[in-house]
Length: 215
Ligand SMILES: C[S@@+](CC[C@H](N)C(=O)[O-])C[C@H]1O[C@@H](n2cnc3c(N)ncnc32)[C@H](O)[C@@H]1O
Image 1: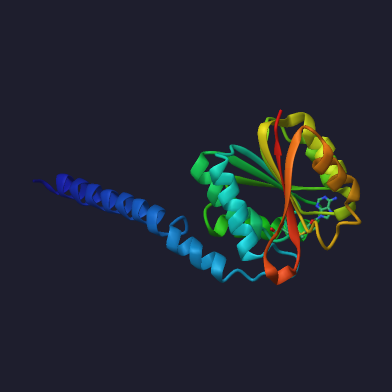
Image 2: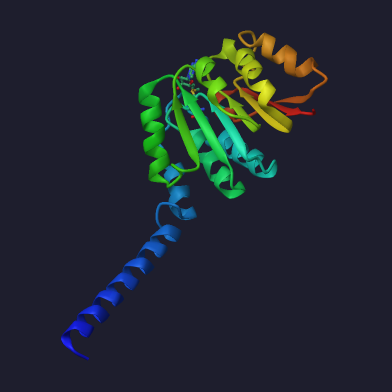
């Protein structure tokens, strides 16, 4: 083997080792289940964020509905988006999370990147009343968690794009029942939806409305 061949062989081995390391990092690095679990367990949540129990319920709903195109109205720093993002990664789907606060969007993007979900979840900055019409349908999963008195408006903007079988979850429906009376009256009385109100995480002494779009 001459010197040229030896250098080529060494370079080849180095490239192969690097590729192996990258593959390993992909499985056990920031996209690995253990890393993500720790990230979620250590997430610096504020009072705005969804609780861990509620976020896990959202994740299970996305997975069990095999949802492919989801929208979250109200991202805060992305705790719900990270949890639902894991589910959408598993279903091969995509989530759009919307917030009008630029700091919230920045934090959400940073958090998504930390767990390698930046290609699964898109954070959209702006007033949801303006950005919702820009999200293309069909939509089969919705989590509404922004301005309580606007829940009905968010739903009405999304409704034409909802597929039959879509799941729509609304947060804080016990503590803010009066502010969203129009929303609750609609989803509880419309023949197009099955709706249940559940007491969710005790941490907030609140609940969620889960609606299934029949047709
Ligand atoms: C309760 S927090 C969302 C928590 C988040 N879903 C989670 O899982 O951690 C509500 C968020 O809604 C946002 N928000 C309020 N009104 C909005 C609007 N009109 N359009 C978009 N976002 C809005 C606020 O900036 C805030 O970050």
